[in-house]
Amino acid sequence: MVLAGGPAASAAERIVLRFGEVSRTVSVPSLVTFTETGRVEPDLEGYLRLLKPADRQALRTVLNQTVPVDAVMASNFLDTAIGESSLQQLVKVIDQPPDVAEPALASALILGSAREGALRLIDVLQAYPTATLPVNAAAVLSLVRALSQQFNLQNRLFAQIASINGPPAEGPDLIALASSGRVAYSESAFSFTGREGTTITALAYLPESASAAKPAPLVVIAPGLNTDMNALLYVGRDLASHGYAVAALNFPFTNANAIKAAIQGTGAIPPPNAWYSQPLSVSDLIDQVQARWGFRVNSQVVGVLGQSLGGYTATALAGAELDWEHLLQGCAALNDPNIVVLNPAVVWQCDAPAQVVKRRSFRDPRVKAAVAVNPVTNPIFSPSSLQAIAAPVLMVSGTDDVFAPPVSQQLIPFSSITFPGSLLALQHNGTHLSFLNGTTELPAFVVGPDQPLARQELQGMALRFFDRHVRTQQALAPLAAPVDTSGVLTGQAPLRLLITPRFSRQELNQVDPGLRQFP
Image (cartoon, rainbow, N blue to C red):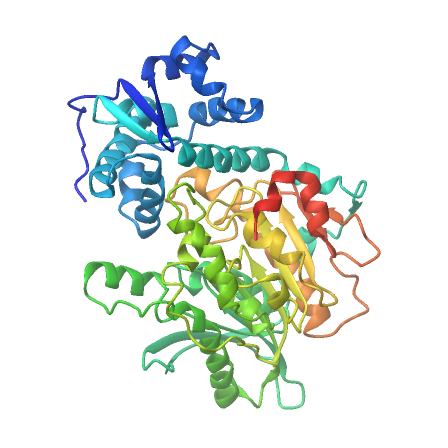
């Protein structure tokens, strides 16, 4: 893709809005005036009459919404797989052939973000490099509704959910729970051959106190897409200091090095949907731990902690079944010319939805508890397939997660989980990267506030959850008990956590009736 880096030779002066067979012409200056002042010029008035009042306000809000992205960041993002797929969705708004619209829109996105060092949709429209910009009004309305809902929910999701059933109680002190234990442990790096014939690198922490008479329970760490085990090993070290054996791995097709090699042409391109079978690599890792250290580790009692795509893996290992029919239904919108889908988690799952594997269940009965952090879950799992979960799941969600958005990927899926002891933890201001180590070079708005605090909160939650459900120390107070129908508040500002044992779809619809549109 060739992207323009300098000033555009021309810029959009008129927008031609198409409504099926009918079209209207609006001047770009009129749209700028409406965006910045709210005043409606005559050429825009006829179009706005066709919109509901809420949609008119949403249009102005979205056109004026600022995202702290500069030209370099915009260019770098468009060169990623997620950036390319996002561009393919955004060009539905442009009523031109994709081979014309994609480079033009990419140029407008970069030029628009260069104007003030931030990106507004109105600036993108102004920077479009043709005098006349033909637009699909139905796709515009779809985009406006999606972005408006995302911005609104990001601002009010935590407060509204926390107040649904009355004031929450005060929860456990996660920072105190995150204190390191006193158990010494050793570190062992190793590798093994996976089922696809690839070499899988792994690492284990083994408590020195573990023995044949008192084997240590095992926790496996499953990293997310385009990262590696190092991002979550801080949790592993903390658990090991409390007497857990810990094993972590780098998945063969989705770790950072494998993806970089595939992009640069120095490594194999993974087969479509290879990530679906990641739970098998975890089961193989458990087998490896048993073969190497089975006399010191109880590999029949396992906890799994995974983030993002690793969160999908943890959820599948706990028993959630893959639902191919639900996946195809959820992916249909990506091919609808009038619907713009900017949910990266959905786009990723729908890379090749017709090329599925026959297997539906990756349940490993040795897994007794799962912590799924910002997991990717929908539409690969459905409400009925999530009910197959056979171990307690702690699902952790962030209100500001744009890569695995909380409503579609965690809140709605959790409302279908019925296994006793399962919990939802919603982190105020949390992003997709809040809990990860090694992301300091990324923009602050992507990383989120106070990562050291977020990491302590995850350490505290993971230790208490595994102590109750892997060590079966039921005398310990849970993070939130079934009697806490309003949930509990814990953690510290700016990353307060609401932890609840129950959350229904009806309660979610109270937050925003528009959420009924989600599968």
